[in-house]
Structures are given as C-alpha cells and as structure tokens.
Image (cartoon, rainbow, N blue to C red; front, side):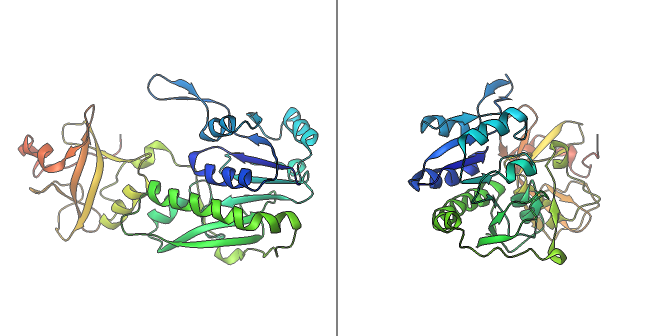
Length: 309
C-alpha cells in the first residue's frame, strides 16, 4: 500500500479527493486553505475540502503557507509516496515537491499549456474556446509548467457558465485520477514537456473585473464574460440613476446603438453590436425579468449606462 496526501480547497477538488480515497491506498493527510469568513456576517467557514475530509475521517492540515517549516515537518513525518494537488490555491516550494518518491502531481482545469494560472475555466469561456479539458502534470517550481502525464478533453457547450463547465471538469478530473493513480504510483506514465510556443496565462479574478465596459467590449465579449463570471464575480453596470444593476442573462442582438445607450427593448449598445438584457438583479433586490424592470423606468430609454466608478 502507498501513502497518499491530497492538497485542495474548493468544491471542484472534491471528486479528486474522493477518487484517492476510493483507490484503497491510505490518504494519510489532507492540506487545504484555512477557514475563511464567508457571507455578509463573515462567518468563519471551512473549505469544502476540509469539510469533506473531516466527514471521511481524514486528518486535515490548514497552514497559511504549505511550505512553512511546521507544515514541511508534518509532511516529512507522514512520509507520503505521492502528493496530488487540485485547486489548492498556494504555490509549493521545491522542498515540498521533492518529498514524495513517486512525485507531486497537479490536476489543472485546462488543456495545458493553454490557460496556466488561477482561473482557467473562466478564461476558456471568456475567450470563446470551443474545447477545454483537464490536464495532469508533474509539478515543478514554475506555475503550471510541469510535463504532462495525462489529459482529457471536453467541448464547451453554448450556454455553459463557469459553474456548469467547472463541475463537469471536476467530475472528469476525478475519473482521470481514478484511471491514472495506479500508473502514477508505479511511475510508468511518460511525462511529455509542454510546448512553450502555446502557453497562455490567466490570473486570479477580482470583483471589479465584472463591471461591463460598454465602449470597450463587444456584445459577444460581454455575453461570454457574463457566462464566464457566473456565479462569481458576475457582471454589472450602473444605470442612469447611478445604482448598480447586475446582469443575469443576456443575448446578442443585431441592433445598433451608441455604446451604453438603452433601447426600448432593453437593448444596450456596445463597442460592436448590442446586447438585449433578459434578466437582471437590481441593487438590493432579487432577480427579475429585464422587461419588467424597465417597465417602471421608461425614462431610461435613450439614456446610457454609466462608466467606471
């Protein structure tokens, strides 16, 4: 029997954790991010991986830095044969990568070398990629740059959001771990270097990135961005009254309007083409049909959404 350690944090990492548990090899430790404040009341909440690991009776560590001396010492004492990482949220030092004799491997939610970085699912949607997938790479010190040992491809569906696409990739990743774990432990998989000419990057998403730039972004780009940023950080703008309006559902329309200007059917001009707003969430209220929202705001027609705050 081989000793395994898992490192991950969000819900998307759960299928990979469960695949390791189901392998029959002992998962001797789980590393995840510390509990964080969540919601308006900022309630201290464990990560989904911590909650599931504790429910499974697995020992959990939550260091602020996985490479801190006490964390490394704990890993050394556990003596794992293999470490698997999936959406952990920390860069790992070389001293940690060198610990397990069978290696450290990372499950990444893109077809590497495309979309190295922290938001590959959202990046694929925002870019209009027709296909994405999951990649299993042997970890090196450079971000997502290690040689590939396995991958699986997945088409991007027309109405995918980051939530729906990410969930499918998470399940796919769990199956890939289940299939490849015996070979990873036997060290029989060929590691293929990534093509440096094909590398693209994506960064951590920030809440302010969800603001729509009507004069700078085309209608197609905004529609993709909305799906990419659903459920978080979402897309929003500020109406003629200065209040924040969250976009929930939109469609591209051939209507021509100046950027930001509002038409009678709640079409809004963009840098190229226009969007029709179908569902919105007004500030401080729930989701509603955009047409119902506009009914009480006839004075908005012909006015424009406001720019950056």
